[in-house]
Image (cartoon, rainbow, N blue to C red; front, side, top):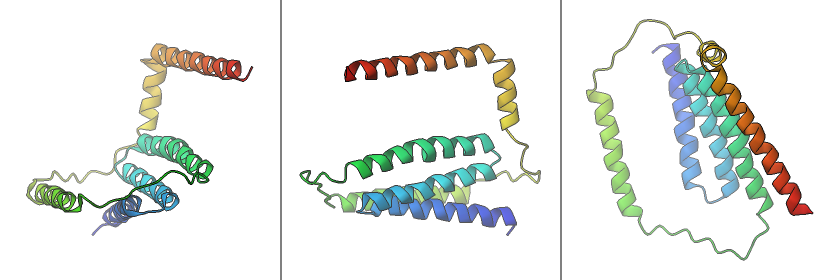
Length: 165
């Protein structure tokens, strides 16, 4: 096995293991922190695939935005005690059968597919190409989206300020 294969299997193990903890954990804080490792594992797989822009976006958007928002929501609402949370395992057998069928299908695709293995190295960075395209061919759309987001931010701030008065 090559070095990249070992790193891939390490990231896959981290991703699948932490995703399993997210799904099976009864404590939402543990599930949220396990989701952090799941997002980092996916970002690591993106890096191995040569999609460095997707890896950075994965970390910035999901870890930096969504996961932090989820943790703030959990930390700010943990004092609510009147809400009854019901966690029943009524449909455990159909779920196990469905997972077994899906797992079998994935394994059969992995084993019976004629994979094209290229001896060429990992492609160069995609970030420079995306930046070049944004500044040359898509500069008008890029600037218009920036202005649209600025207008939305100003509108949200004015609505929030109007509600306080």
